[in-house]
Length: 257
Image (tube, rainbow, N blue to C red; front, side, top):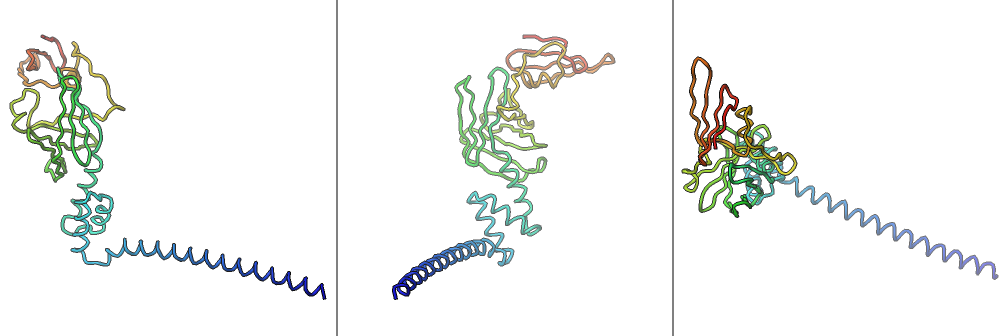
C-alpha cells in the first residue's frame, strides 16, 4: 500500500512539473508571437505608404524632407523615380548630407578661417582677428553649373557652397563683401577638410608656379596684370596689402613687399 502511495506522489509531482513546463513554453511562444506581430505591424506601417498613389507618396517625402528625415525622404523619392522632380530631390539630399563637415580656408594676412557646416547653420571663425559669425538661414537648391548649392545667409552677407569632384568650394556675396579686396563674386575658393589633409601654407618663393602661390600664405591676388610679347608671358599679381609677385611664363621670378 505504501508503494502505491509513493508512486502516486511521484506521478503527481511529475504531472505538476510537466504542466509548468508546458505553461512556460506556451508563454514564450505567445511572447514570440507578440514580437513577430509587433515587428510585422511596424513593417506593414512603414511599407503601407507604397500602397498609396504617387502624389501621396510625394507629399509624404516632402514632409519628411522638411522635417530633416533625409534618409526616409530619399527612400521615398528613389521609389518615385521619374515622378515630378523626385530625382532632383534624391540628388539634393545626397549633396546635402555629403557637404556637412568642418573645413578651413587660408586667406592672405588673416591666417586660417574655419567653416563648420551642419544641418542647422554655417559657423565661420577666424581666431587671429577675433572673428566669429553664424549663418543660420540655410537653403539647398539646384545650380546650373555645379548641380546643387547651399546658400547660407545672415544680416550681413551670404555664403554660397558648391561641390565638384568631392571638393567643396565657396564664395561670399552681399553688401559686406562686394567691395572687398579678398573676394570675387564670380569665383569660388576651395575649402579644405580639416584636420586630416591640412598642410601649413608656405610663404611665396622664387620658382613657385601660379598654383603654388595660390596655395601659399598670400593666396589669390586681387588683380592680375598680364603682358604677352614674343619673349613670353609676363604677369604681375597685385595684392591689396601693397605686395606684388611677378611671373615669367608661369614661374615666379620676383617678389615685392
